[in-house]
Image: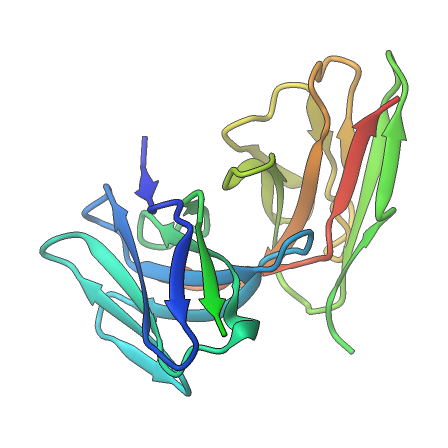
Length: 112
Length: 114
């Protein structure tokens, strides 16, 4: 059974600081890694995704992969109150398999 | 605008009743998925389909059924056999491609028992 683990939080970060969210995964063969943001009562929204070949930066968001330790991170720079949400990590398993395994999410609160 | 449309937004089920949740996409995606989310929980996969007229069970398929007669549509039926149906149901779609593709979600349907 593939597992994706996240600290449920809440994680509180001052406005303007860097928020760091982590996710560990059990399947060493995982190839693709996704971060979703979910506001309370809403559906998940894709923020970023990376493949096993490298990290990615998009505006204030950076996704980093540590394959040796089997964890993926999401960094949010210059945190804004609108970043307050639950962040879900999802991992694709077998190569070519489109199924994703989701973590239970980390609740992030940005303190003004 | 391309997207995924789920309806209804809220649904109430009586004891012994089957109810069907609609999911339509105009993104031309081959793959479609149904997830269930309970409060404070992650998403659990109910069923998925990668091609018309074919679908596979996910991790919690018992008490649910699906069909995929058209590429654009993937309705989910919650049967009376599902004894705890109260949850937030999410439909997603993605293209097919090697290495995994991002899934995009509809706005969801909240199902409750009367």
